[in-house]
Amino acid sequence: MSLTIYGMAPSRTFRVLWAAHELGLDYDLKPYSFLGPEISQPAYLAINPNAAIPAITDGDLNLFESLAITLYLAQKTGKLWPATLEDQARTYQWTLWAATEVEPLLGAWAYHTLFLPPEERKPEVAADAAAKLPKRFAVLEGVLQDRDYLLGSKFAIADLNVAAVLYRAPQFGIAGYPRLSAGHRRCYERPAAQAAVALREPKAA
Image 1: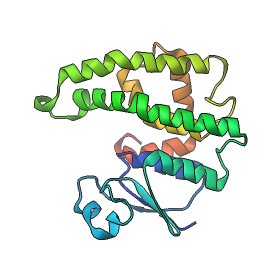
Image 2: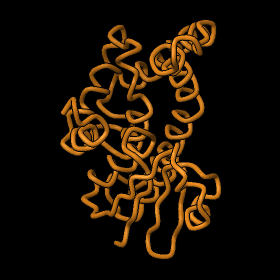
Image 3: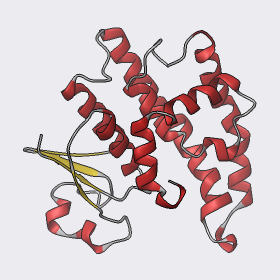
């Protein structure tokens, strides 16, 4: 597989790196920054016309959107990809749910609590997100009541995608959701997850 990953680990590129490690894929990482001029160059715009990271090239394929990339890699390799049509549908369900229901809220909370300079933070944005996140966490707490992973007893790409979107969830606080907390911990205890985290936060590794 002639896989090239464009992006820096402390970004959504993390999801792609985690997937590549889980799937045992060799890859060439081009550490493009979301602030760098390289993403606005014609050569990269031909890969991702959004001038954003991450993106990949795999042979003749150019692909952007981190969660689409992880789904593609899992399906291509046949690893972490469910066998039944029903579980494939659930994989898309949970991936889209994480991207639309959780990521905007968790991102808003993190930016206006942790990342933006204090003078640029909007407490009302963080408070609104914080008020809405528990409902989303309760959804995961409920589905994990009778299973260790979203699709059953085995870790799959659906779990990776949701756990990757919830990367900052422990900083928000999920101790009140014991099944979710345990599930999140199980995902991040995986060697591939730890390898990707070490790329994202080398000082913590």
